[in-house]
Length: 161
Image 1 (cartoon, rainbow, N blue to C red):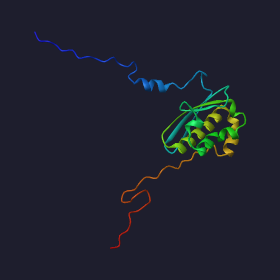
Image 2: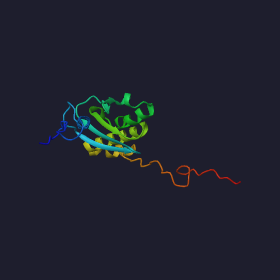
Image 3: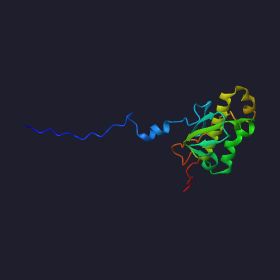
Image 4: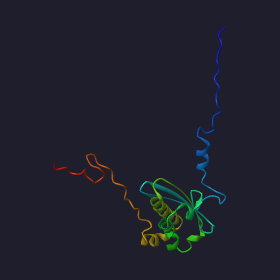
């Protein structure tokens, strides 16, 4: 009789995804269901923002306070603009998940996301947010490099002889 070899089968993950993806999928915290949601984009950064009621005005970006996440004063000031413009916005806790791009583009995406979430919560804030250009999308992105050139607009150096 011929012997049959059996291969060892590793136990499957329940959903077919690694555990880290399942853990990062959770967006709600102890505060319960979010009050409003907004998405902000800038260059290649995408920020998903949730407002929670009854907070102290804390802003958590990827699980850290925004003062520690954003390293430059310019980026910190950019994130704080919606709270300075809208009175009573400190009554919300803000939870942000941001990825892609650099520090400044992430700050711009978070700013737009917070403004959109505040707008989703209270439609009467539109004029104040529009007045301070918080709902305007900055659509500037990096221009692509063209063939036959050194960069997007920079040409190769001309050689006469």
